[in-house]
Length: 167
Image (cartoon, rainbow, N blue to C red; front, side, top):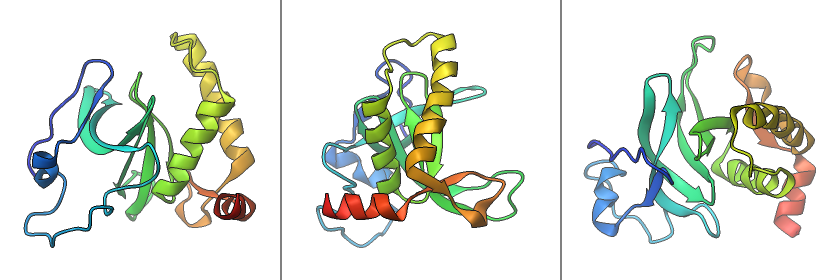
């Protein structure tokens, strides 16, 4: 893949233009249907940045409000295999909120977290306290996958999946 643009100033994202799709798909990939890169209502295909120890890093995925989702193979030092999952990022500080089994689970989590928590205070102390509240909100709607320990990958509970499908 080509180098992605680093968006390192607020709001830390921008939509992907039609002529830039080649930056996010594999070279020589088969043409995709128009909906192939959609993950839900209101989620825009975008370039965005997330925090790393050395600053911000560029990636692509989907953005809605202050949240971003990307999908990738994740390798953590304590897990000896790769896990394909979706990462939920809070754009203002670029921090990962959690890793989810699917992009749909991540978008559901973003909806829950934006509805149930007040994100207006961006101070370090407030965001640290928010981490605990976010974990409690996730635990009320999601379970951890058993096969990824010690990596925490969240999966929607069956009853939440039914509510999502029929609600």
